[in-house]
Length: 435
Image (cartoon, rainbow, N blue to C red; front, side, top):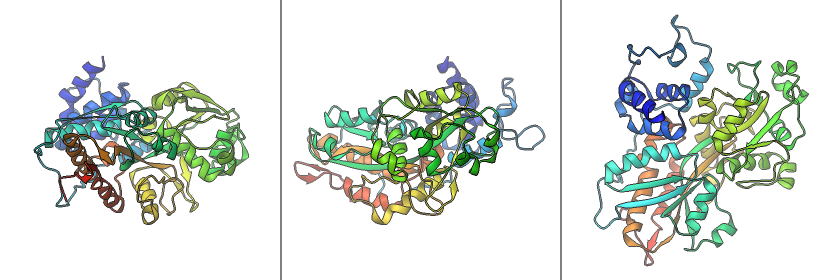
């Protein structure tokens, strides 16, 4: 069924839909993230300038267009504004003179990677484009950040991928020596909720105290005074809060609990940080889709997912108060602002986190997603292909980040990433055939 729908949207209608319209239509039809990825990978750049769907499509309904018949915003106005902000394509292009173009003599024809699910849509588009540019095929398996770390530790892949940095113990257990973390994108983890009485036209506001209180099990009712103080609408919601969390190890969880640890001493001391933790309360869902599914199916629930999942499932997306006291809506701009807030003090090895970032516009539950590579490579052809691919990921490939729902890496951090890529070695010598 998904294949038929994919062909229908990408083929018959894809030429006339913007990327945002395609994402919304795919969500309305119940398509999964991998299918949405296929749709977006099939789009030409010109697709983003299309104005309207095929008028002959009798299945189009009013919620899949930008406006209703009267020209006024529809009931999902805020959701569309969120989608537009998060999926915007601002026309950015890499302007450096160090671009990766064409194939390179002696490089491997295939690279294999595995790991984080969060950037899977982005990587699908990237690696489709990269094969067109260089002829190198990049196979990526979306198996979760924990799986990406284990795969690179065991040297069963050429590169791993994770949304949570490897800890010192994991680095020490790596079979091939020291591992570099190359940040290639950033994203937002958002509180998402299902309260039937509330429309999503006014996002709920959460503070560090209320989010940590909910997940510690101290705040158990939606009309708790701490929540009502910032959300008067909750005064009439006399319902227990059902807490949903990830049941599997994930980088999404790492970012979420890293934030809770940064803002709550009790969380830091009693629960801690990791890709999985012993949750004080709540029920589990497997993967982002599992958490989103539990929130959809259970009234008065709250969970955490990447923003794209909340948008696809018509879930409420909460604003989170940052350390400057501002309630911030998650989008690519507020995530980039979070990274920029740490740029001057970031660890040169780039394993730093960016939760609870300084800055008036910073969204506080933000994180990098990294590609993991060994500093010392044992195959020359693979090493050449790998370093060229990594360089392309932090330069030209960044043009697709915003349009697919990921924030670009700030220029200051890209320069540090380039330094690491140029330190990748084969037989003790730098192998990147560039600068």
